[in-house]
Length: 202
Image 1: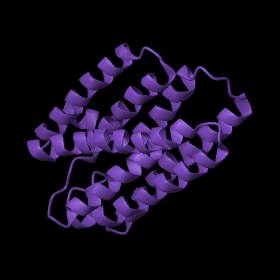
Image 2: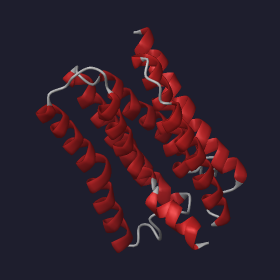
Image 3: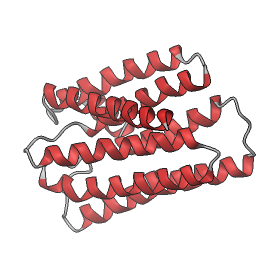
């Protein structure tokens, strides 16, 4: 049980956008000036990590949520909308820089996954944001490797194994049902493919 809690906390959904950005810059074959890279990473870190953590702390402080994992359906609604807005804003900013277009697709994909998860809330279905986050990252890495013709099989294998650990941890903690875990993963994965298809076709 302690291991499952560690996995759920350490691999919280807010960690995956910054992980995706790190991998993007580590393996990107086209050169980008370091000051630009550091600026982009700083904005992503603040927008997707620092701000959400502060926001969640405030929500918990004022008892608007009872857990950082947002267990109930009602307490997920407003944070989900906020995370959707953050993803769209960062994605739009990255797209306008015209040097990291593909990285923008990652955030637009996450925003679509958040929108879908928000819709499911009105049907009393709370999909797993943990598995949606890693599913989205895996989807991003698949089309990232295809787009730049990079072999990322070892990294993909690692994240597929990690997705299994995260899914089993969420089930062991009784945070989600089997269907919610799988629905979350495929929502994250397919959302990325949809946005990449739109980007690639345009």
